Length: 177
Image (cartoon, rainbow, N blue to C red; front, side):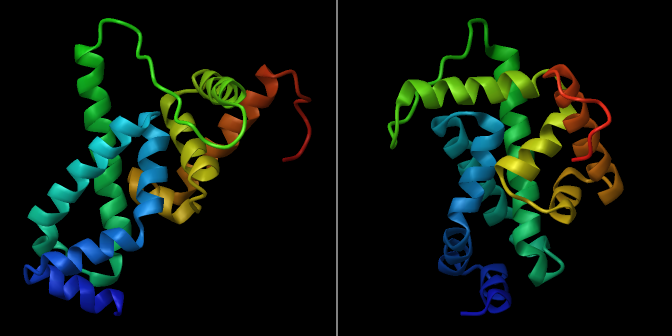
């Protein structure tokens, strides 16, 4: 069924239509959530929060064709809220359990830690833009919408963040990307 028709049905209270819309992009939602949260459990919690907000606020959506960008913005806000709560309540180091997947679990965990460590060297806005661009494979327009900043600002954050990472990693300053 057409996305616009499903959104209209969901706005009229059809739970199955809303569920269909969510399930159509479940992998994208999970990848986006995992990028922020860093582990499966918290990523799924953020997605649950997003689904509740979508259910409660679907009637306020003005443009049916903007459903997915609207829902991803809600998901990012859910992730940020959970991260804020976690910072308030966390007294010991967060230990995540590596999910079993193909390849060496320890090598994957080391690579994940390396990426997170490198991104921690950037300011929060640059790290967020780079995560969304390269880990979630989002375009600049989508990132702009989700983060509520101009596309030029997003491009600048990605460029400056990559430039800083390259300098910190011992790369040449004058090379093009």
